[in-house]
Image (cartoon, rainbow, N blue to C red):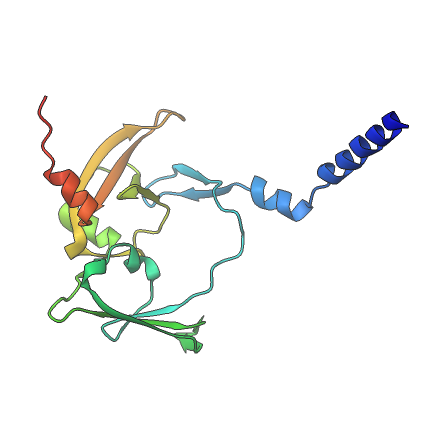
Length: 193
């Protein structure tokens, strides 16, 4: 009798754990292929857990509408005086936004908003290799035309040509280091050997 119960439990657990959801399988096995701005270098993104886009929120900095939330990654948090949220929906240029976030900066601070592409064109002379962008420790999977940064909050920009393992292609890794307390502390640390 004991063996029958044990066999039944093994059978029941096998059935329970063997069931799969086809939609779930699709989300986790789907590979999205993107190409860099300047070449046909393939970039595979398997990190997304959902195929649903995040709803849009309208951002206002000092009263000015900002169409892209990417600016939040490079705006100095110490320069934010206040932040307020309104849940009312709004339509701007035929785009529906489910709410509004108002960011007021400290008096006298005016961010210098610039696209990543324009920032790179202004400050670097690059070859024609594909470009991969890294902001602090995060690799950016963005369109450089659309990604906005606050130029005042960028501390260091470095370019490193690296070879990829696939097809021995070289790419430019462009690292942007922001003026966070942690990064400033690392930058001021002197290592004596």
